[in-house]
Length: 402
Ligand SMILES: C[S@@+](CC[C@H](N)C(=O)[O-])C[C@H]1O[C@@H](n2cnc3c(N)ncnc32)[C@H](O)[C@@H]1O
Image 1 (cartoon, protein in one colour):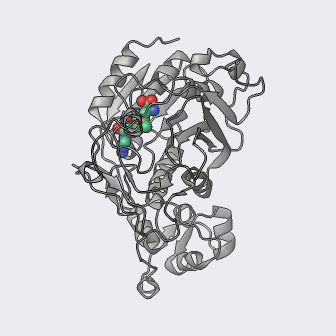
Image 2 (image 1 turned 90 degrees about the vertical axis):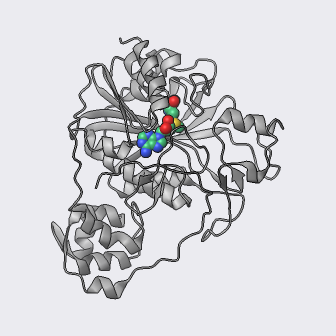
Image 3 (image 1 turned 180 degrees about the horizontal axis):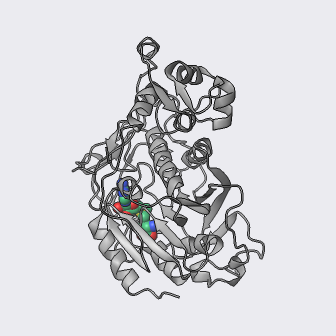
């Protein structure tokens, strides 16, 4: 079934790890066969390793999947262990019914749930995916809508009850992108970590800053959404969740290559009220590819306009490294969680040539689109919010296409 969004009402996040487990007795009674490539992704192992572990070639029976679920090598990817068999069975039934086939000559913007819209893209047509998703438990967005995910949770992306849920949903999106990526294509995934703390969930960084400056008189219970910190199977109050590292590992486990984990060293950040830890000055950009040697134009770093990803001579070395020193967005354009055009600009400059198709499945105010057009690429942007999509449309109408 397509993951169509549905009306959503804010509710608090309580990161209680569910007490679910594998029902071996039930599974033993099932008699199905499953595609080996589907199984490999669901158990977090390479197809080669699955063949070695089961001595099966292209399809597996239920007993073999159960055997994999028992191996030390098992690692959750898109689905918790207890649901893997049900998920593999449901995969045979999923199909997207749509009349829309994206093929922009310059750009196209579409309203909807990213997972649904990615399914409409023909296989191996996108050269570069560059995106910044909602971060876990951090912000509420305009027009947020609940989405049903493969693990059964129904919530807006980023407002999962647990960090594991967020990591699973992110892996589900990344895995769906692998199908549409060209063999030498790149995925650039901007993500920040979250702390497992008790906090209010606000609309924007500007609103968070106002609160830190003492300009928000609302009490804890006046907020429409709050996040608690108790009830997790191992995370304690105040701990960093390590979400970017978990996402990178799972991208690898569903068969992709993690090429680099890039640090975006931000030149300005929000003040941090905590006295027991250092302030956070970074976000991450995961560079993920489908094959070992994606298209990579290293020299673009020295040539491109700094506003669109070229080297900032004042604070970056001549060597293109995994530390990118870039300004943060000024936060204009009516969107509370933007990246600067230099960030998608650099990713696009390094991994595309003019005419290539760039996709941002969480396009927000359209910075990735502006950067793609600047570099002479075609662009496809999706967002679940009409408000943000309208902002992106205005910006792309006025952007210059090389
Ligand atoms: C961090 S913002 C992206 C900001 C963007 N990079 C910019 O510079 O403006 C994440 C975006 O994802 C959108 N979003 C959230 N869930 C979505 C979903 N399921 N499908 C498509 N878009 C979604 C939000 O509306 C929001 O605009």
